Image 1 (cartoon, rainbow, N blue to C red):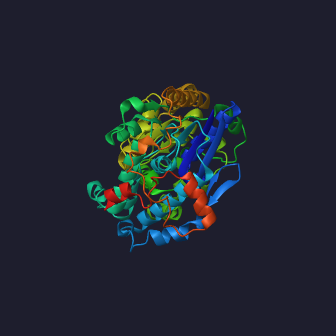
Image 2 (image 1 turned 90 degrees about the horizontal axis):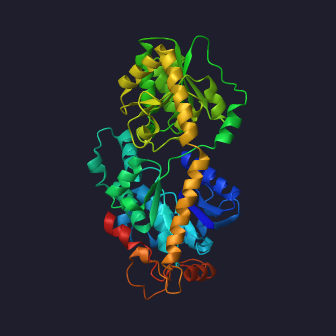
Image 3 (image 1 turned 180 degrees about the horizontal axis):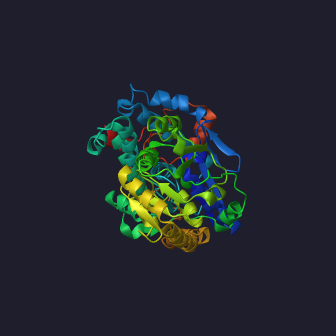
Length: 468
């Protein structure tokens, strides 16, 4: 069995999604499954296969793509600058995928809607395509807009060019896929709204490599709480979507009731400096410590009393599972896939998103009741070790891969007549070869034309139709 795991985004910038890809691919390799991982290096502008040294330099096609997709030629792509950037890089990604090749794989596991749709456009031979959505493009885009303009309404955002684009990509990614592996009921329900068939879903929650976790947890920690203080922790990216501003707001409310706590925040992100300023303005700087990047989170958690995941949207954060494995009671928000991770009052607690008062109240309760913290933390550890092990997740995922490969072989989709990918539902083949209008080197042009389907079109009429 040979598997390709693919993402449109930069592999090292994916946070928890990178953890998912890394853990799963390493487990599969250790169990005799050949796995390649393909993604983008945003800084070097390459599409590359991890650990093989195979890459496609986007600079070989970007100038020609910019000319072909200019505002004069395709004005619909330039109604929003980030939309134009995404589409330009999507086409470069598609050409990179075609250049590096998909023909040799038994199954492709796409990790986002853009990679799923892009891969479906460049495959000449149909291969089972299974897709995981680890979040929602249009909902995250709305939250980004809300950060800049708090009065933005979701229904208005989805009528704007970028909102329509994100929603379109999520719909096209679903239409391109044969099946879906999802981590939570929330993401499945969201995809069903985009007309994904419920019978094509396999629900496999995120997991942690328990052996590696235990090894790291056993290392000596250098993070020591101040005397007579209980530690409330958050680990993750310092971004608006993570809701850290809500945690800091709750700290201000909690300070009015008690003084025996400190909040440890581990991570980096674009909002870091703003959050530091926020603690000063709110008068809680003496109660908050920003540790920056922490290399060993399991060890860091050993002196933590309560873990908080205040995200506005988060599918199933690895940080919550890591806290549970440390025997720490967790508080998550009632958003996205997080409620699936706790049983209220037994293995954790759920509070409304953006509700600093509710969070402060729950924190006050847990800080007061030591016996409750101990009981809930112990139950969380037991639950996480049973239901969130990498072994269980990987075996279930491998079974899904085998299911789709077997189905594909039964209907003989790899026969000689299966040159055109039927899932595209594309227009009739173009009378001209793909990329005939693209000004790139003749050698690269000939190579790409030989690898692309005859009906490959650039720009993509399906996307233009939806965003115009």
